[in-house]
Image: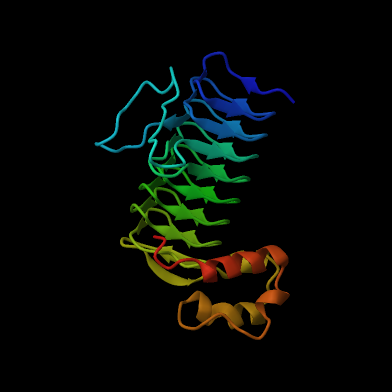
Length: 243
């Protein structure tokens, strides 16, 4: 299906759109940017303006796509498919890697994704969430209203962060964090249950999720649903200095 773009929206040079996207009034999308299919992008959204870095130029990106930094690959914004991006959301261009938003996520009113962030699939980013630059939010994470992420923070898959929390260090996979500064308060049992895990399996994974033990080596992870097994293995194998 064709894209439905409001006549007041501004689509700059270097923007590539897939199919069946809705782009609302007064939204500005500056290139270089690549956007997939079936996204709902509300009014007054801003995507692809320069990262907030005092040392970098601030070109009129809605007129002509910036050339980026020739010494680094990955300048710009890439957005997947089937996202709901509500009014006043902002997404900045990368400075050393592509600012990347995955698919099937919900970005509530006024949330902000800073330069060089990576947000994976199936996330919920609530109203007024603000990320610092270079953050990595893994699949299925849920950030509560007015959460603030310090730059270079990693939020693990399936994690939940309570509203108005200030996150200054890594939030583990399928844990719950809350407060200022945010602290881990437990395991996201509800989230794991919704993915098909029973109480015994969640209990067996508990020590690993809390960072107190290695991942169980008895084949437990291989018996999990395939998507969850893959996600847990990827989290366990990640470089520990990525954040």
